[in-house]
Length: 240
Image 1 (cartoon, rainbow, N blue to C red):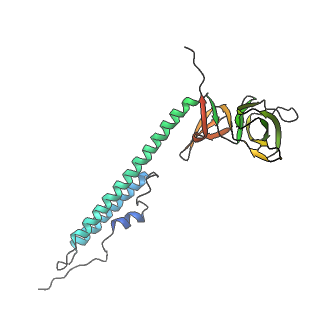
Image 2: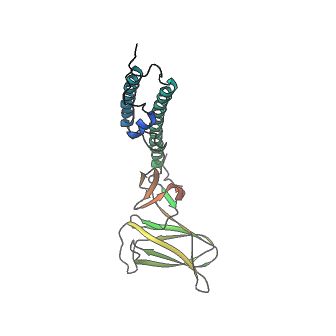
Image 3: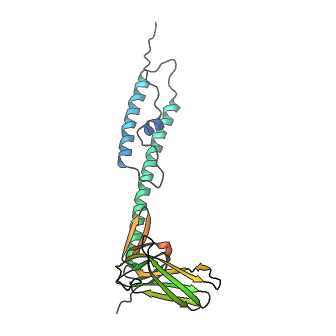
């Protein structure tokens, strides 16, 4: 008696390749897995089971399929699903952490903040900066706009140690400049005429907090500074 077997053209479908073909392979831990990824994986899983069932029904009785092969593919599907769920949970955790950081940072609003920045925040017609001089020496403070145009120069006879300087927001001709962000440079001049940059910090009132691309910044009016640049925070005292 002759036995006729039916062998379909479909071959065993690899789970990882099937998932990857629909863009549902595991993403990096730092990126969010879209909800459609799980839906696509479920659809692929159903297609895989249909193909597998067809192969089992039409396999050659004299050469049956290797059970370990489709078992491995089932495990691959499970692994991809777990990775998608892990990425989704990590994305949620990152979002919650960012929200917590913003909440904590909001407590700094209204405080006087000093930070390392090359921009000076002019707020309510006033700005301030601090620098440290190694010895008594003349120091020049230059204020320029975003285009590099010189607006104001100040000559200061610095004393050894910490020095504070305030600006009333006027230009060299006595005109009043609008509040905003202005470039600032502090330099000292040696006896031979060599100019040396003097490290300084700017001071302003914290007005808002921004979170962009996982980076948290504090705004001092029109000047944005990363939290790593903040050197001191003085919160306004509250009366009892």
